[in-house]
Length: 265
Image (cartoon, rainbow, N blue to C red; front, side):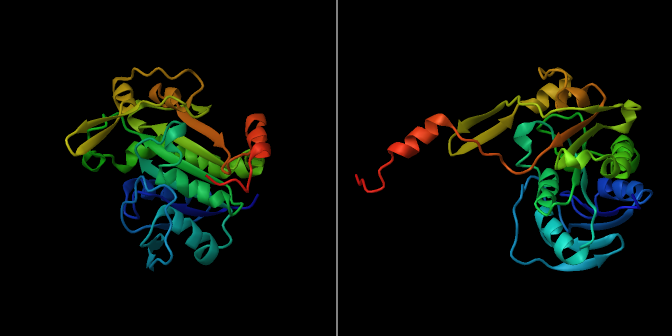
């Protein structure tokens, strides 16, 4: 196919190193326009606004809103001829089934699918513990090298190869480039979930123990999962669908049949 028109967004903000790195890489394979948040919007999920301010930027547009805002505004008003939406590169991994609804990066890709536009969410794994502030972690453009290489390759080839005839979006996670060349592996999201909560007086601390496992390189995730691939130094690519599926369920069907709409307590 001809050079694709790519809408690039993220949740780390327009000035993030990861967005610039991907912008430069994608510019080698397509016509790229950034439509990204003015400020960090990490972990906002698919939160959306009624109205957002938009300003010109050297890479495209900066939006005072969320990643989902950026995708809706971009596809409907700013870059309407988009062939592919790319979200990232996020500083920090977005791995496992349970993060798919939390991540602003992944949510931007999901938002695109409802416009029937294929999308790629891309994140870079940084081996740190949960209590380390990501804002304090240094990651220059070179660290994103493997993430950029994989994203550029997929943006260049996935549309023409028919990848998006079988999935709605790709969730890509890459190790830091300092680990060396990383092969690409098709994966599924890990279903491992280790959140806990501890109450101390009037406060409850929420704790994701997965980060500790990852920082130690000691994870229980099986082969074939996204987290296992990245911790072992591979680029994880999970082909995913966005809309929730519904199926008839015998037990629920039976309850519906016995429901009495007239009955009151």
